[in-house]
Length: 279
Image (cartoon, rainbow, N blue to C red; front, side, top):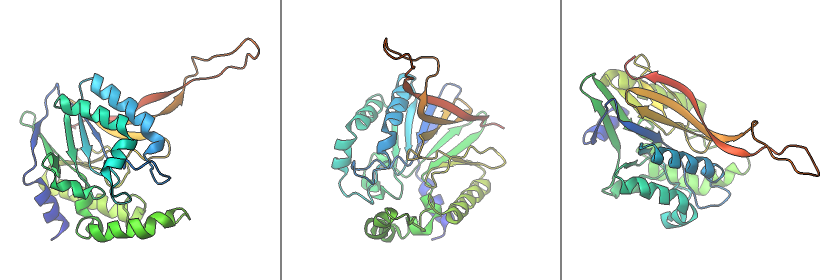
């Protein structure tokens, strides 16, 4: 089956969600929540993630997770991940209880495909003005990580994860191999153009805010070295947002013995780029 047919199949039974002037969606992908070990790349950014979830919950956003939320290639036990990152899962439960949670699976948490409450894709649609935003993880455009995902999982568990400690990166990963990333992105762009839609994915870990001429969007990931990225859809406006630890230069503390200021750290929401879906 070609990547085009794999993507078509992914969207065949996708739930339809409305886009109006008042809708608020936030898209996260590739959290890769792990088991708290040295390989848990999410751990260093969990504070940023929790701050972001609190902000989006308080501001009535609907949370969309675009796959690879949990790292189930390096880890076999989801319950251990949930125990380590219980605060994150507690916040996700709040979204679920308020009917504002949609979870998609990716290649690293493919085993979730057997759960009735987790989807492969979603379609966000507006009739007037006409907008079709197709959302899926994006691994369908990657043969090794879709058709041969069990082999890829085996290699990650037993070969590439141990070798990463010595600086050897996984050449089969679109997130770590630029040539492969570019190939996957081109396929997703071509698919969106041929289907006359916009497409939003994860998988490559590279954040992208496209437009109607280049109709490809990517959330980025939650395992960047210096923070996390996501995409906000607010009405018909779409934003690429970064959450990261920053220093507040306007607020500092000293003491009576040493007047050298101590600057507090805080989690900062930074809009990197904003566009209209209609242009």
